[in-house]
View 1 (spheres, rainbow, N blue to C red):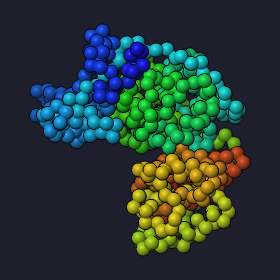
View 2 (cartoon, rainbow, N blue to C red; view 1 turned 120 degrees about the horizontal axis):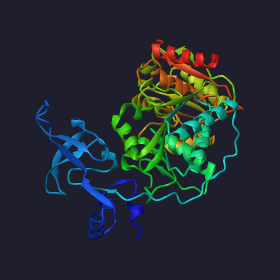
View 3 (cartoon, rainbow, N blue to C red; view 1 turned 135 degrees about the vertical axis):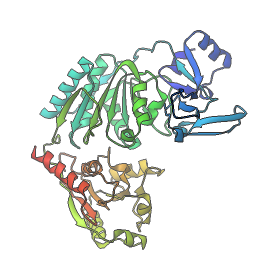
View 4 (cartoon, rainbow, N blue to C red; view 1 turned 120 degrees about the vertical axis):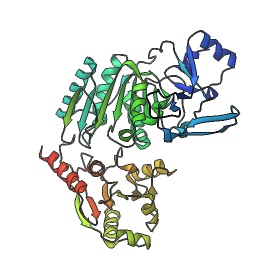
Length: 441
């Protein structure tokens, strides 16, 4: 039996490993795997202000006291502390036995073929070449490129070079929607290559793929597995706001591994050695500039199950013109209050993947959505409206990303981006000015 396939590069709950206890014990004695508790109590130092033990989850590395709870555990028949931070991935408690491979990792078995049929613009070629230089130097690299610059295709060029160096690669994205968008494009670009796609509810294969596409949360499951981790949309929530996800990325890297990042709206806290900037789209057309429309009583109207006339007219115009559209709302509550039978999606919606595909295939006219679709969605001739653009959830970065959904195709490089509001905010103003600045460059 190939035990290595069960364990290498991953942190796993003993209960998920279908091997007899005596075989597990034998591997521990042979120093091929290590076993440790899922949650560890750390005794505060005598200089600490804390008097009670500090807990650390050994899967997600959280030490936030608010993320732990203690209850009577049926598994160990005593009071037992468990981690609530990564509970959605299965309970990890003090009595949980985590297993980790200590032996060497297997080499890449397949011979990947780079079968992408596209061609690069001058800017894209420059970006690939600069990224390859960073790869050869072992330096972390940021690709700072506007929405629609062709970041995925640029990433293909860097990955193709890394594969010639026999590197095992993870591409981590904060959101499932981006993984679902990337998966078929990677399968087409890298044939004869094992590509694993990991997100909530996905199949968890044995062993390690040559390329792993994963939400950042899925990296909690890995330990020293990858030579390179590429973080797509590195500024996006939740990765940008959760230090345990940053730790998870570092934990998933080999000791000499390197992190690369891609973003259209990089924040100041991103750390990197070298940077490539692309201020224009691959088709050379300017970014669509948002326009403002006052919509003073939209909340009251929606509560009364009425669509504000300006918004109703905008939606009707898109349907009459046969243009696919997205209407962004600041909350799930407001999304659900919207009258009519237009499909709507949010983070927990079970049909989210299906509805996006229906929109892409032209089977439905448009979607109502929260900010969950602000990134990773490419649909030809898409038009976009934001309702309540003045609300706090619509930061400058979010508004730039939303506007970036429009005009991405070379044969449809324009489109409408409208911010419906009841007062122009500084974030709205900064987003528009940033887009105009990029166009001027």
